[in-house]
Length: 227
Image 1: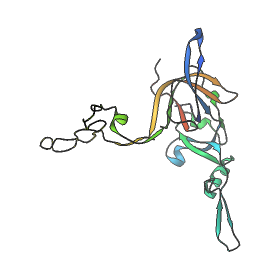
Image 2: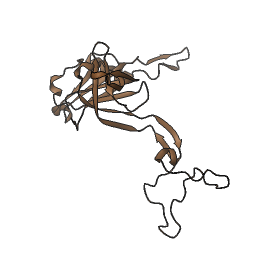
Image 3: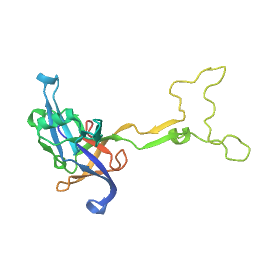
Image 4: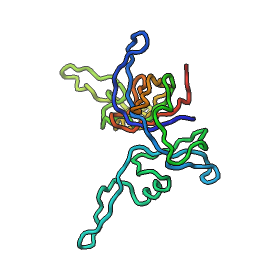
């Protein structure tokens, strides 16, 4: 892998391609990301580039008149993180991720990675946390069939039999059950970059991308690129 970037999901729209073909696209605000650490085989046992995305305010710890600690911006950059970013010469970042680039040695601390590393026609993989759906039944979660909706059936959206009493006398592992749906890490492969707006750091990717709006998206060079 030689190209990857962090971004946030803006939303979906549609554009017209060559010949007036309508193309549904997902708009991503990709970068700019900054290199916060270079990992080498000698020091870390592997080669990688650590990048940060989106500025984050520092956590401020003060004391009141009674000497009790007060923390402002509790979710801000901690003292340890502040030292890590200062070593790289960059401001505090909200998101920090690692990419195992084949050309990791070509990068330097504080280098910027922008959307223009990609171009129209590139194949990419998009990774994000999917939308959370809460606790759902098996009809919505797994697409199972419902029972009759007529009066008196007493079986509408229930799951039905999970395991007969004599055989197999148990519930098989992996049986679809009601439960938590969504909010899992998902990757969609072989998405096509339709357009790159380098000035505004926008990527227009054909089709849908996992995750809700404003969520963090990791865009990488496709590992199973197809024509």
